[in-house]
Length: 230
Image (cartoon, rainbow, N blue to C red; front, top):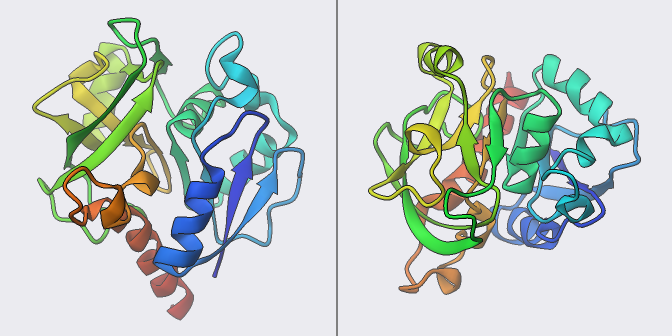
């Protein structure tokens, strides 16, 4: 079992993800530079947070043109699990792998704080260890995290069970329907604005208690283990 962490110029959360996967979750993970064109050796990919290309023009739009993205699109079609966290979510949207758009927060300010999410979809590689309506304590850190989508496509998201997580009790950025994460129709590609890698060890949480955000990564490990056994 081997995961790839895709690194773009300006990524800044790749080391956090690398540490959590290798040292906390127990999955072998390595960095993959964005100029790579072959990703056949990986069982799953994670696009970490940060500010790829300094968020020039629009967050994620330049990174979405990187050579590796064509390979990611092909692997997405083949069912490879792909997770985009924060800027990674923005890149997946800009690449057309997920619907909608991510724009500036409604208050036009960077938002960095802990909050709660609620689980809606447990039928993805990243959520199979959760139960519907579970609550997750997790931090956000973004300035362009407002998820928006047209009414017709919003209907499709719900119809296809593509809304994976919603913010609970507060909407930190003005996202449509308080959406925090979505997946594609197959469920193998998920984009998430909050940072589970920053909530996977008790020392990182405000009350020094263990958050269940690590179940996102443990779900992926469980999915891959089950897939390999079959």
